[in-house]
Image (cartoon, rainbow, N blue to C red):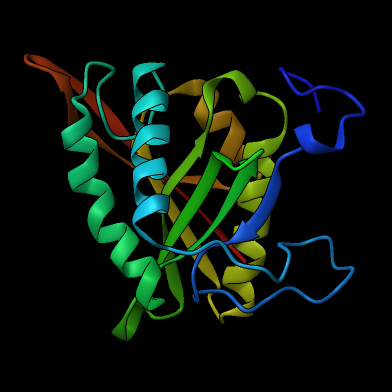
Length: 199
């Protein structure tokens, strides 16, 4: 890995693990998330707010404008943490020296959509962008979704060619678009892209 990670320093490599009870522990030697989960508690919530806020302020296509107030992010994060705590949502996270540096969250469908999932968030700390951590988080999360019995996953984001290419490399394809669906600032409308893939 590159992008700010010290080569050859074990402590500098982010550790990916599941969050809360939503995913079964990975078998030993599988290369997936370790068995020891990260608690979906208030400390995780605070760290997630900070990470999401940093990614938004860096211009990431994460559902908020760059000028977002931290309290707005906190209102979005609170129900996600509760869903992770109860197992309603599933997630994997990356920590580096006890600091949250990446997270991927998926909400499984219910009823007639129980075989589907929606990617709620895929966040990587801005200095680590491009080092492969986002791909590792997404791969681990999709493996867990498959084990849970899901066979289709979708994601929505403000149209961004870089983000679109990232998901295309992960096997996603464009399923549709919603003109003017996002308003990052007053008077500015952005098309939202919907992408998905089968598992």
